Length: 218
Image 1 (cartoon, one colour):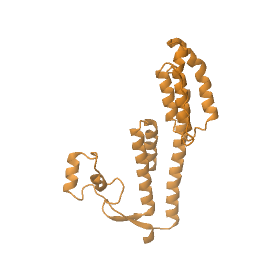
Image 2: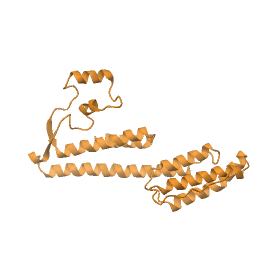
Image 3: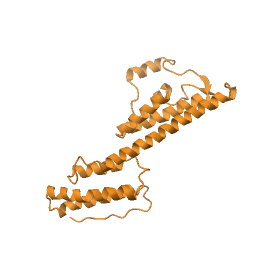
Image 4: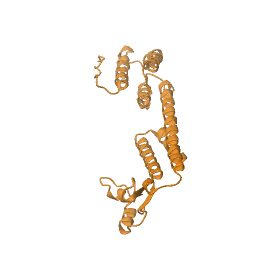
């Protein structure tokens, strides 16, 4: 076998991904140095991996990543026998980054909601200018919008039939609400969308944190 170092594009938005791919390729080539012996290969991992993790953590700004790349890299090396499955140096770091990010997001969301409420309180009531019209047709995630979605079944067939028969079932009536309430609802919907995206991408821990944040805000 021959190890190939692929050039990293200058336009690569995530150099960490390229570096991890190159390291993974290098460690795969190390199987030839070990002569195909699993014990020798694992011994190489015991010597090389601590140096690699130290360099990654010291010389790369990992604050902008969700840590998924690091966890995947470590998991891949463990599956190939280069390191032990008990080795979690990068995974622990990724979890710490994710927790810090979620805490910052939580604090920012709560502070923003608090500022809206304080601004509304200082206004001494709501004027007609501070009210916005809302209805089931305009609200994100409403039954009306769900019924319009095509391409994948988002509603149970029986529920869909019932909604189509009764125009008022589970619909939000047309009304006016304060701008604060409208902003708050949109913020909750944004968090819920991120929560669903986290579940679909396998980031269960991040999804749990978002669920906790939504419950705190509500």
